[in-house]
Length: 228
Image 1 (tube, rainbow, N blue to C red):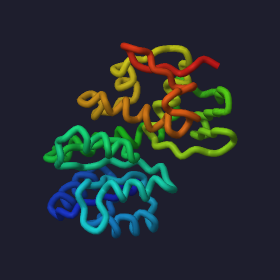
Image 2: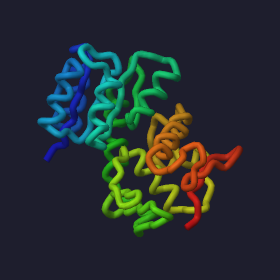
Image 3: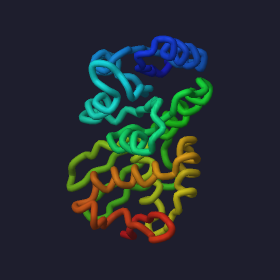
Image 4: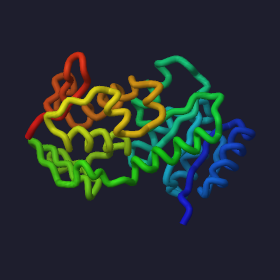
């Protein structure tokens, strides 16, 4: 069965262009033209991934991401005509998995969709065993993370990043190594995205994100997961 992709953009020419390329790639495509409509369709259709413009009428893209992230970890790729770093960081911080700046090549967007879905679906061969570190339990086979027994909601990118670091506890990774492991094309251009996802993870798993006990910073290099 073809995976459902929800494409949200108030520019109908862009929406139809993206829809055509995604359908050609074998996806079933739903469309919406404002933030409220996007959330209504999302609740009814439960798509596998959302392609979402940042600037939307009714509710903007950031509000839509926040609403989705309250209950779902569905992958989200944001489209943005803005070039400022702060807009990209904000999109990632509220829960987007990737971003594509406008203007864009539709073929690149299709490649991004496939890459994010792959990160969402893959079992991580490097770490297949259940890991327990303090009150944090990571189960790659179930694709679950629990803290103090409570199930956490992580985006596919956050889970992939946590599985990578926890599966090699004690080993330091620089940003390039993390980017290559996650195989996200965005990150080759914009490695500060890694820092943003680390920040998001720390907010979810650390008692005090300013004094992390699980994901440690290796000064001048990158990050590592504490050894059990």
